[in-house]
Image (tube, rainbow, N blue to C red):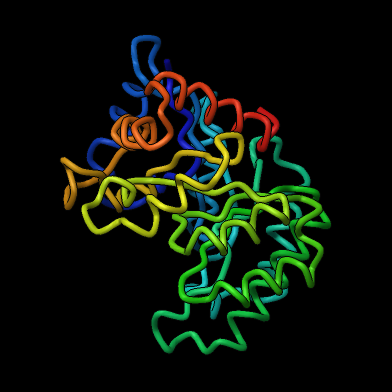
Length: 258
C-alpha cells in the first residue's frame, strides 16, 4: 500500500545533496510513496515546487505564501500566483497560507490581510487551500467564512487545536492534516482530536524536513515516515495500517482531483 504525502517541502536546502535520488527512490515502482504535494511557503518556494512537479510525474505543487514571508507578498505576486494556479495543471492547491500568532511578527493585521487575499484567490481559481494556523483558531475560522473559502475546502495543516475546534473546521468542509506530532509522547490533545475526526476527513502529511515522527524525532523527515503516523492512527481508530493508508489516500486524491 503506497503513501499519499499531502505536505512536503523538498525544495528545502537540506535536500540539496540528495533530492533527486531521494524522490526518485520513494516514487519508484518498488518505493512506498504514490503521490507527493510539494508545498510552497514563499515565492521562491512556489517556483521550486512547480519545477519539482514538472520534473516528476507524481509530484504536484501547492503555491502560496506562508505568514512568515508575507512582507514579500504584493499585488504583482498575487497576480503571478493566480496565473500559475489557473494555467499550470500541476498546481492543485493554494498554500501554504495562513496565520501564525506564536511570534509578535509579522503583525496580526498584516497577516490577516494577506491570508484573506490568498483565500480569495483560491476561491477565484477554484482550488483547495492548505492552511497553516497556529494560536489563531478563531481568526482562521472567521477568515475562511468571510472569504467563502468553504466553497473550495482544503486542509488544516499540522493540526494543533482541540477536538471541539476540529468540529468547526469539519463543519466548513475541511480536511485535517495529521503528521508526526501524533506519535509524540506529549500529543494528548492531538490524539483526542484524531479519535474524534472521521476517517474520511483525515489526510496524512510529514511537513518534511520538519516534524519527524517517533522513533526518528529530531532527524530530517521524509515522506516514507508517514508509515509511522499511519501505524499510530491505526491504533487510535482500531484499523489496520493498510486501511488507514488506503482511506487517507482516497481522501487526498478526491480533494486534489488526482
